[in-house]
Amino acid sequence: MNLSLCLASGLIVSLASLAGPLQPKFRTVTIDTNIAVGYGITAADIDGDSRPDIVLCDAKQIVWYHNPGWEKHIIAENLTPQDHVCVAATDIDGDGRAEIAVGAGWNPGDTVNSGALFYLIPPADRTQRWEPITLPHQPTIHRIRWIREHGRGWCLWSVPLHGRGNKDAKGNGAQVQRYVPGSDRRQPWKIETVNDQWHKVHNFDPVFDDPSNRSTRRILVGSAEGAFEILSSGALNSARQIGSDANGGVGEIRQLDSVRGQVAALSPMHGNQVVIFHPPPPSIAPNTPELGRREILDDTLIDAHALACGDLLGTGEAQIIAGWRAMGRPRSVKVGIALYAAVGQRWMKVLVDDDGMACEDLCLADLNGDGRLDIVASGRSTKNVKLYLNETLH
Image (cartoon, rainbow, N blue to C red; front, side, top):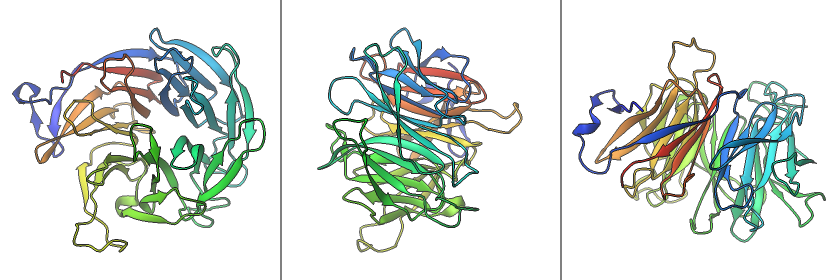
């Protein structure tokens, strides 16, 4: 793989000239070359063999690829006439096998009648078709995620792109909702509206207060109105703003450093910037509207659409992984995935994939059990799924 390393300002630096732990190395494994869009991708153990598999939400299919041979299994197809748009896969009942939910009916221009949400019930043979159970939904449902909350257990959270009946991002707020499953998941689920103050929301992410059991009390939200944090203590919670709406707000958002309170984001939605929101200085009184510093690491991406944070390099600090897809641009416009790593007081940019991945979505997981986080990505115009095995020497 051809890895180039540069400062966010564009100065090229040779990898060989760097001392210390920053020697990234990834080996590309092509999983699929014939997908439609690749709206969402995640990793979870589907069959209970203690190895994370790859789960893909494609336009008309929900599939999983069996680790380590990556055999493709279609488990749902054409759930709605419109595209599927998002997927969540996590073991929520402790049996070692993931539960799966799917958002579909994707039509962002229809803020009244679009959208669909399904819980998939697996057969005994999980390589066969799963039974879809229809759940209530909000129009323009866009992102879903299983979240384990303190004092509540596993819930399915959903975020629509727009509020019901919105026009030009004005009108009703987008309803962020919590779905609480019962023991019989065919029966109605308890549904709570957690927040409805934003009018154009792209993504959200839990902050793990206790990484050992992956539980949370806080949820990050990226919207055109800025970056926010919800406390998941009850229904209809107000949110604390942690990042401004500069440059059109935020599309993707992830916790970067929970100790220092840093949050990484892509700005604006489908935009060009990788940014870090720093918390206000200690001199600022708590619960004041003062926002911290907004640091731009890179402003050269084209249609940035995927983001993750994790320590891939074994430095003890998280790096930022961003993907961009250049949708609607000429093919001469490059696409790819980059890794951003802190080196002293500076951030370095490493190209993990240079023009071979029009990145619609990506995730991090240890796919081969070597203790290092790998990257999995799906490409829109490149029609591919790739695994980037992390062979960095720690």
